[in-house]
Image (tube, rainbow, N blue to C red; front, side, top):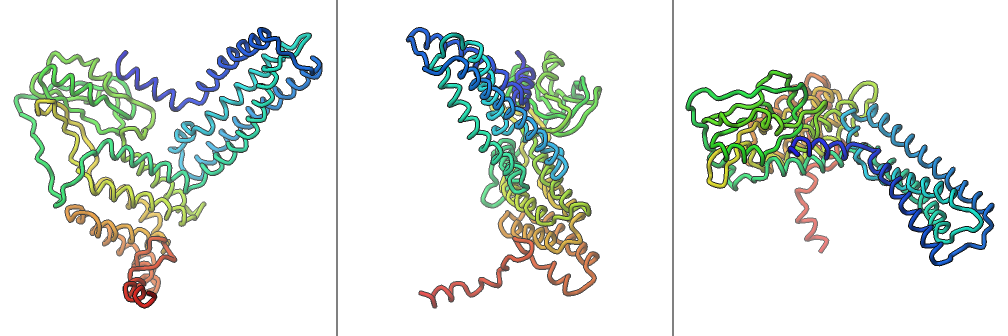
Amino acid sequence: MTWLTRYRIRLYLRNSLWVLPTLSIVAALVAIRVTVRIDWALGWHSNISPDTARIIMSTFAASTFTLVVLVSSAILLAIQLASAQLTPRIIATIYRSPYGKVAFAVFVFTFTYCVAALVRVEQTVPVLTTYIAAYGFLMNLALFIFFIDGIGKTLRPSSALRVIGLAGREVIQSVYPSQLSADGTLPHLPKIGRNGDPRVVLNRADGAVIAFDKIGLISKATKFKCVIELVPQVGDFIAAGDPLFRIHGGGDEVADRGLCDSVAMGHERTLEQDPMFAFRIIVDIASKALSPAINDPTTAVLAIDQIHHLLRDIGRRFLGEGQEKDNGGELRLIYRTPDWEDFVQLGTTEIRQYGRDSIQVQRRLRAMIEDLIATLPPRRHAILHKELELLGTSLKRAFPDLDDQALAESGDLQGIGGSDDETFEDTPEMVRNVL
């Protein structure tokens, strides 16, 4: 099985809601056979009449099926609300939510078990089977309450932004594992030997590049003693016939099909190997919140909070990755990654434009940029100073009143209402007086 096939299966299972409930049907059928055999082997029979047991089992089955319908409706409603209020790019996150998958699977398991138990109630009522159905139904009620609580909290902008922010940190750490040195200098990067024109491998299908097999490509390049260059960046949309790989320094024996099977294409971007996509989702949420139809600058401030921490994490890392060596120190794989300017511009430009009329957004953006200048190495400052200048130009156009301009020019981590640094200038003296 190729890497591409394994990746597609893994991605499909993560994004599918039906797999776990379907397996729970099989598990319920196996469980009912086991429990009934235990009852008959040990001679466990309930004092409840068979007619009463059938009524109770029918009630359990009907009620549990109602819970299955309610959970399905709640998930579909959550998808619609998240798409309309936040961004369509967050739908995949809802499908991956453990709340919906676990609740759906448990409800389907209980429904199948109760129906199967109802069929097996004849002249006597099996005790263990009846107890499992009864207590399983009670557990379903508790799980349904937990599911409603979880799905409601998941739809809050703060929770959705936090989930995307945490996923963004994970992919940043995987794509950029190296930290900058204390003085902010960059390590030496090897250069490609220019011995003739490289061999070009063309793409076979339209789609966005969502992942690639880094280890497999390094292994191929090491085996055939060449350098493999992945032309598109993860997240780029490429059409069939576009250049996908360039092979430098030989490598004529490397099969084109094997190379193409090392890159996963999809209809939309994913978060697995694409740190820019986390920014894209957060910025889309902020942009929609700042639209005239919604006009919710506080949600945009929550989005800037996540962008702030993501930019601080990225700014402390070495972003010149994308050049992998083999065990002998020879360069084997080259791939494109976003640089610092890309992240800063994506994280600030659209929010600055759409939030130009909001003093709250202007102050939070300024506080973010000023904090990044104060905490990141000097090599990261150029684009940040440029963004500060653009922010100042934007607020002068948006606020003709000088008092509003002065208010917008003051950074505030809460947008409006947070304390600035001047409030704490006398903090040491105040502490001494209290003590």
